Length: 370
Image 1 (cartoon, helix red, strand yellow):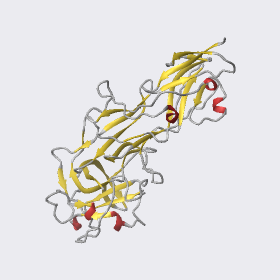
Image 2 (cartoon, rainbow, N blue to C red):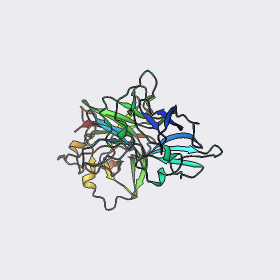
Image 3 (cartoon, rainbow, N blue to C red):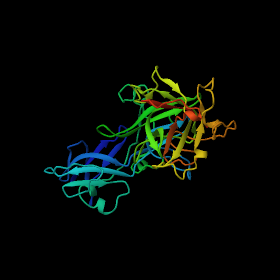
Image 4 (tube, one colour):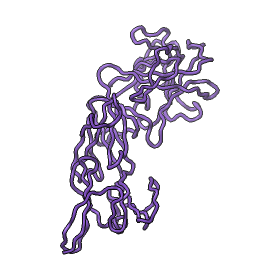
């Protein structure tokens, strides 16, 4: 009887990756652990990887997909899902030097086995044609917000799904109950992560550093979400901005979350107005500003200590008739994938403070559930 081998590898934790030799005749199968450096059919195993791994807000069918981001802010009870488009195994010939990355192409010396809906050609070469996957469950590990790091004391298995779905995942999801970092682990290190901030109950504030920007000859202080193709962060449509405040200060940095914090010495200042413009280019020409701006109230609200409240937005200078505006810090109303830029203006002729000599300004948003 021909003795051939199969390779069994944990992936990650409760994942089990089975590599089975395809037999043309009856034969015996021996199992071994697959680690970096394992030799198999004239190749040495390097690693597995996931193509376009992303964590998304799980939306009902037909709903707009919220843009994938590194940080995700959601309402308590909402679910996140994790997905990838390709599942790769990287192998090299013993005498080959292979620098595998996102743009690598499979060759005879540096083989890439694609095992998420592979084409016939991707599965027809060694060692790819000897590999079949199955068995086990998938687990996602989380770290508590106070740590933002995985160690043996705070590991938790929070998602489980049969192996038939994790190879090309479509509906793996979980409802976070608290702020955490979510990491999908491989054999060594992890494939990717996102930080999830869970909002419920009382408003929570988030701050961003503003930068000076001149648009059409007018000096503004600006902030917009960065990142491409993944944004730096994004918000659920179940959240919205209420009060907006501006402070003269430079951001402090939270040691655990790396978030911008408001220093004790921060001084509140009064803008004349703010604008929140989707996909802003180099000019405001052609932009219908009236629906994308709020002017400051004459006096600071005693309860909120804010000059601007989006649900009671004053779209005209000196107006006393507020209009509700619905926005998150990253997108406006139903334009979930149009990146917002926030422009803060200090026009002294319209009640704003004189910030000509300002060096550092922070914008602060109160975030509430809809």
